[in-house]
Image 1: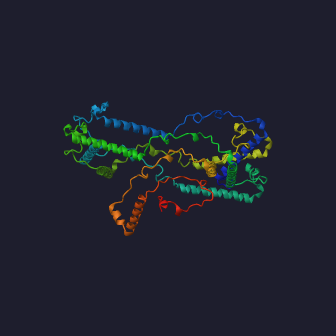
Image 2 (image 1 turned 90 degrees about the horizontal axis):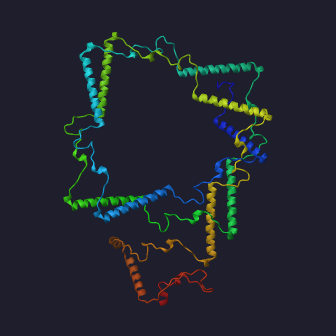
Length: 564
């Protein structure tokens, strides 16, 4: 039906999506035109979200923290509590340990010394399999010992035949051959129709497809030129760069305007990174501390055991006084799962061979079958059943019918423009607040981040320029790190000595001569009674006019120039 010569042309999913987008754009353009043509209608909004605020994001809302920070605080408090408890335990060993858990003073009913011995599920299954095999072997031995008893079978499948595979059944064909047969008939029918069209051209062609009488609104000759998405994005980037450069130029040309910041984050501090916050450690160090404390506890217990051997060892675990029923010395031998499966296969084959031998030895017994499925047919696969189609073909037919209905409606709209368009959807009479012509221009997140970077760099440049232009202001620093020193890099820190072997290995005659020269210079400086020197920080404006600057060779080294 879908591939016949007279079938209407279909389109792929991409073209169908394109048509849907065109229709949606046409509806949006019509709605926008109605909104522009009738501004007196106004905008009606009944969404309650337009008149409410977010309780958690309001300006007066208290500051909150992330889940990670909350977990970190909980871990820190828990560790502090554990350390406090451990310190109290070490400082007051005379308090002892108090336990109120009732499980400490109870016993397990199933693990008590007088409890009967039990076995696991695997051994119970193994015992059941052994008993089943013994019963099967007993039945097999009885059948071999008493062949005169005969075999009794009540299975209905032994007395029936297959209706479709009987010798007198009509010949059938495979599914591939049936499909090929259908294709040949369809081709023959299409050729017949094509031959009739060529033999009788006076009949003409009848077409009722509404798409033959319509045009595309966006591809018409008088349609305005449009641009691609890449060009639109490029224009947006150029405009955004121009706006950023304009703002940067205004900031440079008018530095007296200053920078205004109303972000509340500029006046807040981080609770965990404040100067008075206690020092924290990573998870690795925390795990290392836990391991060290655990090892210290074990070593303490071991030391107490060595120091007080008269206390003895107390064990209350009931498993220390019991044995395994299945692993005892007098337990019977068992076999693996593979051997058990092999035995089961051997017994099944022996039973099948016995049944086959009985059928060959006693053909007069016959085959009895009482299964009802041997005498029935499948209603849906019978020869006279109507042809059906797959789910894909059904979906394709549904899409074709829907497209035909849409095209018919479009053709009616084009052929009868006087009817007008009726719409009861409330969305047709509203406009988008954010996409209206008078809406302020917005930018993407990347442009916002780029603007933030440009503004930050401009502020840094401005601050640097002010510092260079006004050196008399001085530098104000409130960072506590500016007034601290490194304990390990201080001048009075002890030096690190190399090993003797390394020092002896690196010693050479030239190095010894240089070391002797340095020692003699130090002795001369020490015995010269030089005046004390003070260090002062001078700017470029402190030097006198007309005085030549001193070169690096005239700088005093430990005050030796005054002595010399």
